[in-house]
Length: 110
Image (tube, rainbow, N blue to C red; front, side, top):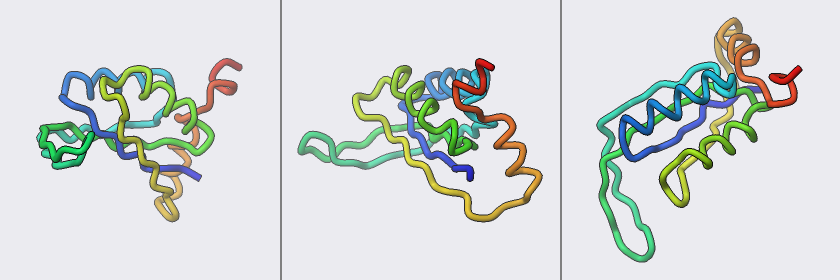
């Protein structure tokens, strides 16, 4: 199984850095960057607004734990938004590409 992982970051520079890190480490097969997102949210009792960049990453289930760890270590937010949506159906060659290019640390080190 694979996931489409939704991650928000404060700006394009941080988004590009995290996306590149995840793909180079083979924790995500690919990452789409969608700049220009505007978020309205509640944080510490106040309603806030901020510009953000959305990352959507193609991640195998096996690599998801390591993926989350890298995002948390390199994200500037105290509580980063990381949400995995399971991919139930899809183009079989594309899903195979995700599985082949998004690996857990134990398989990347082998």
